[in-house]
Length: 407
Image 1: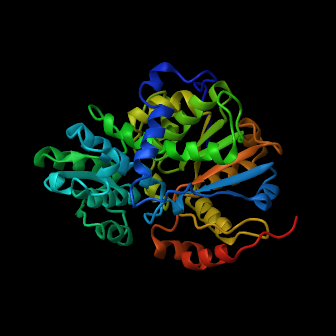
Image 2: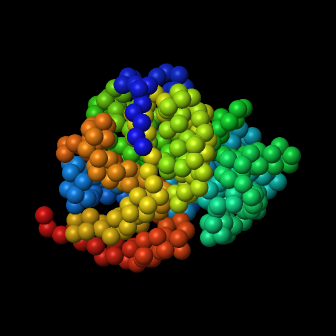
């Protein structure tokens, strides 16, 4: 289902939003996080897929591959760790920011406990950052988080708490445990009275936008390399972090932003319909685990309502098809390992190009230059192999030996 957003603005980046998230703060976060051994110092690849662009009848498709951001396998390595750093600095302003995740202050932090709910990747990133900083970490998992994803978090030393409910109920349980025990919530979703840390998480994602501008070229205030950018939904944090950066950079010339989410976890689309942060209408359960969120982050919505041009929901089967498309590659398209949530943008593009009317509604033509952010790799390798029919290792092996064929 496609919903056009009549509230989307083509103006300069508003001052009230600039006071919350800015390019300057995103750049500072990038600098601080670059010292963390748990993250790559190189920008993640921006792959060109000319064969796929030809098949989908657009001018260009480029994919930002966040699977190699760190051993954590997803873009979440940019969010929770920098939020943890900034929260520790509020308590210890004399600490050197770049030294926190290097463990220099482990003795000072050994009795400090952080907690968060997660579908997998955010909790894994927080657990890794907490371990390296030297503080304790508790992660709350809901019933649908797989055992494989749980173990991927537990190896970083986090204490796991399981609940019987869904993601939104795990968020509530994390908040309850924090209040009872005097722990600090480091969450990527906001709620009443809790916005500062989710802002820090979202701001950390600005590194992705900054790298893409550096890789693809672009000048402040001018139209960039892309006409259309597809962004994953979830609670809205990543989409807000990236869209805000590009909006500030390009101003009125910003690209068309399209947010994608599972049909059964459509909280952002419902927010667009109602004009305020809303809840999903479906069961929320989806193979796109990172996007299986039932309630919009109010803070993220302050950025999304005026900047996102369209909201599109997709089915689980479309995501699985997109996983296989990227894994297969072609003569001119490098094979890419992308997880269920990572392929949402491609699944959305494929759906739109199969529907001429919807394509026209969002301005997709043969001249369009499209950006897709693959937010995760095979963060659950067993599930990845079942869904693509090939192990992530096999795809990476083909990727390493891939050479583009002649035009």
